[in-house]
Length: 237
Image (cartoon, rainbow, N blue to C red; front, side):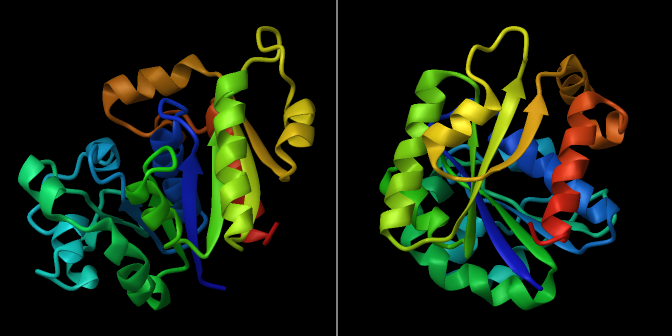
């Protein structure tokens, strides 16, 4: 089954982009052909995470109608993993129309097992346009009340709009420090808990080295949790 999954959050700083990068690679390690899409149109941090050198053709160019979306697909250094990068200059950011996203992204679905979209945070027009391009949606939240509250707002709006929200990922959780448990959050969110990614200093080490944590140290706690999440997607859960 080929899937287009939008990864969204209510606020910035949840670790969503790091998660999208590592989840895409984890799925690639399972032998699945994956296209990660840097659809945070004003930041393009996913492009930086993948350390892509050639960004001559981007999602922004496709949104502007200057190229077809499949022309913006780039290989990465990771087997089975491809990237549609975002532009890094303000001129492209100003001209790209995010409202075109739901129309162009399905054109690449048949070429991949998974299309994983890194969405802008929040509920602004650009964020909703990108999120609506996903056939399935995963929410990312941290274990603090403002992050959970904002994710709940996003989930409620998507539910009203008839979108398929698979559930949420509890990111950067420390059982001894965070007072809000995954189980309590699941009750509050009213969406299934898909996975818990623990707080792990290895993630920061890997980022400083410019290597995704699932490659840098596959045995790290965060890596194991992300790999388990990829396996869960593969099982169709």
